[in-house]
Image (cartoon, rainbow, N blue to C red; front, side, top):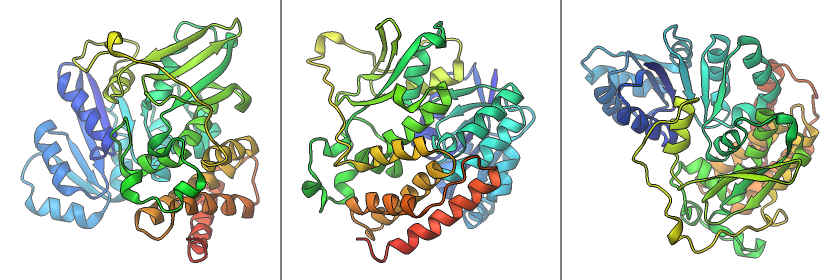
Length: 384
């Protein structure tokens, strides 16, 4: 029996993680769940999974839940409650599925406490990849990727000598605007952005998929997860989302991982690794596949991917700036305060204004994140 804490239990990855757990009650027990403010959904999760702890980071939401909840689960609140359950002694694995920079601190706390990490919060490695990987090595813990692309790469590398790896090929669906020009993108709406052709995801990651910022975050994440250089990471557009990623070896052989676009598959693999467990998720029927096609990403139109490569290659605090500026810009776009193309402008101008610290401490990264958020907010008045 593996004891699990889920950080971000009411989001897309969190709810699908709980679905995997529900289908495998003999293997997993939910010890703690954490959400931001959705007190109604977390209350339903408490009733179903009976965790020892439930945390709502927003204290007003936690107070409302405490007033009406009767049961044995301890209701905690705030960042302090989240950090408390991230390091519980009897938790084996912490699923980090919170969105954005907010996932960094609890992930570091969990690693420092010797917990294995099922990583869905890609921003953790984007912002602090070197620090995170060094800490995981020091503490002897595993970081198992939950993202479908990184799970695919991880699976392709099983049993292989890492020295024989030539390059990693990360696939992207292209999002809802594949093939569009910058002129086409000038007036796109939030509703249009949220109509992803293949995946059901949360709002932030869906917008990131539309801008290709998500693929850029995954490129930076790959550098740290697999110890490769940026010239060994290639992003390709694969509209069908059947091949989740590939690895090319020095002899020219390519291994790919295929499957239906269902996040429960990589989630379950991260939780059961090194075992594979039978599941009734939808299976591939190759006789119905019409084609598998690939294209180069248009990085002149979807500039975020190009900027992510630049941020990664510069290194130091620059990926933190890319991430923070993107978070501010996406939030503004979702509120109707910024255009789709304005997202790129906020990222570019923030990167241009930043003075890089090449070997940042954790404190440097917190300072950089605070700076870029303030700077990006100041740009919103002049960028539409």
